[in-house]
Length: 626
Image (cartoon, rainbow, N blue to C red; front, side):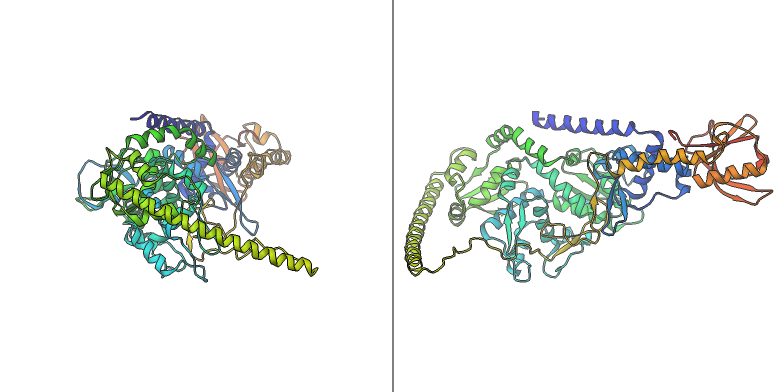
């Protein structure tokens, strides 16, 4: 293990420990409320708390659940958002889903488990990782461009080229059932590749076509493969997985509860849920793992990349830039140690440990012949000349300099001679074009001077020609995908152009320093209880007493109205009730969930019917801190 890998592993472990400490710092009621909401909704949005019977099974009254929920909002374990028409919705932020998957593992249905039996066959082998495919795709876009038609769609011939340019295929992703416009024009694997580039900010949608974001691209190619995989995996998790809580739980369990690399894990899928298999097949298509089958027909999966590193994903843009600077020296060392092999027939053998920066250079000077664990490129005169012509004023090594730096051993003499000839031809051609452009610009300036002199002489007002292109900068590609995991968990339409626009529900997150609406939600609870307590005798909640049947009925009704617990005593036994319904008047009964203060687990409840003759004393049990 290199020092860099060791540092990354230590950093991941440190972040997990900090997240666990944050969980254990929560109160008991807060943990139970958060666990129940996570079990029910995962990262999806919800507009109201769960019904009373759910909280009763957790040993909580409605009032306790509400106060705990308010505290969770204040502590940022629950966030809120506003729909376009003012309705407030809530969701567990994605940054908490990992730790909740770990701490709630025993409370959720385990879909992933270790296996002892062997895998009888591999259904789908993992393809070479998708990060190199993105480099291959964006290098092609840099050379050829990616214009749009007047309808805002990519030209059919470009779509066909993109479709065959990659090792990915529609079969890898068609079972995901992604919904997007122009499905008859865009194959699903092309849509996913373009969307990845847009979400990673490597590509930008303009009015007449796509533009490469050069600053971001230069940052990107300096990353290691593992850092690229981490960012790509986050996009895949958030955008292409099915949105149901069950599938969210499955995706997080698959990453967090299968820590072993290259070890098979059994996938429990008794209901033969097709979305589970579709996600596994997609992961194999991206190169993250492989899908297998056991003798009894159960699905199995194994990771080809370290899942712990893939989940270290909640980093700000500033921390990403810091990583680039911090690891710049390390990248240079990796480039020096991982070398390619230039063959006499102009083919270049590329081992899997060659860095992204080197692969990016090869994309400019070579044609990719074979993409596998050992990829094969072929040096091409046209590519070398094209690389020189699209440098755009940027400093770029010549093909000879590049290969001498990153190849194993010396270049074959005839290969070096050919590269020098190609470069020389390109320099001559570029010089001729520059001279021609200079001559044309000189003639244009002379003509403009003559015209301007004529206008001044005739006292005619002169207007400088507009240098600003105002043509349709707002245009967006019309293909839309329904995202599986938005911030609020709703299906919000987004354009493949990468801009959130025309959503089904427009969400405004109230994140900030924690003082906003979420904190106010808790602060206003305490004064409200002070006012409530003024309306009843203090003895009802401070003392254990025997009351007349009519007063006891009134206290029970008050407990139901406030959604608080009711304590009753019979001899030496104390019962804590969560009242639900009072039936009758003079001879009345109380239906409630019952739990014991001692002798039973606090989370164990039982539905019972009580009569006032069944206890000797009673009192209201108000939530803590009210």
